[in-house]
Length: 319
Image (cartoon, rainbow, N blue to C red; front, top):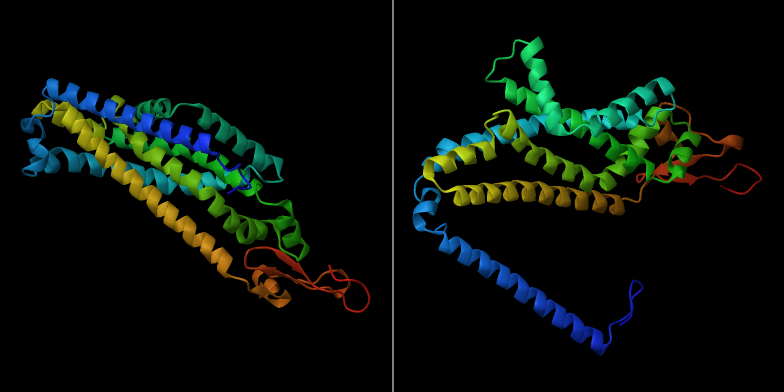
């Protein structure tokens, strides 16, 4: 059966694809078997090395949970600060006022160009020289500061790009019915662009979770990976410890992306399910302004943000 996107495969192409698939599966199986044999020959699969994670809770209560708690705390605080800050900077870059747009662009481009590790080191030195933050809390503050500055700049570009992807007619129609620029952004553009921006935003949140490990590697921040290294030194099982920590990272990030996928689908279904149209009086109540067009024409905005024009009173054809 032919498709709009590609031509239907013939018998030869189908046989070739089956052959390629079989070869790929054989190659994957060979790599897995090779890895298993190497680990087994080195004694890395001995039960004694994996026993701390399956019998008793000492490894979890002493090493894994405290490190995971610090990782989630730093990542959550960085997300809470970076998300609204990135949205503000992204919207500011779209401002018609030069004195707003240019400083926002400078801030975004500056911090987006600097590696997050450099920002963490700089923050640690800054807190050491000019604040009274204790040496125990300083790594945490430095990690959060670096994550916020870098990821807020990246999120600002995501927000700006998401808003710019919307058709220009959206804002023009909204202004035609009397909405001010701030109301157009808040009521029309942002609600529609959130769905498009959500995958990129979630990807950046995953980056925040993983980048907390940089603080443990350089600033002695006791996050999950740093705790895993300490645990591996105590039990003498570096491969087993890093494997367990990798699984924990995968579960955290998979949960985050799964929730984002569910939320995105819910937002899309909500948009498709609504077909109500707001009349002129409804728009006036929202905007706080009169919503009448030239010649007495009235319009409305549907809940998806699209302008629906009304007919003129008397002669003339409706828009």
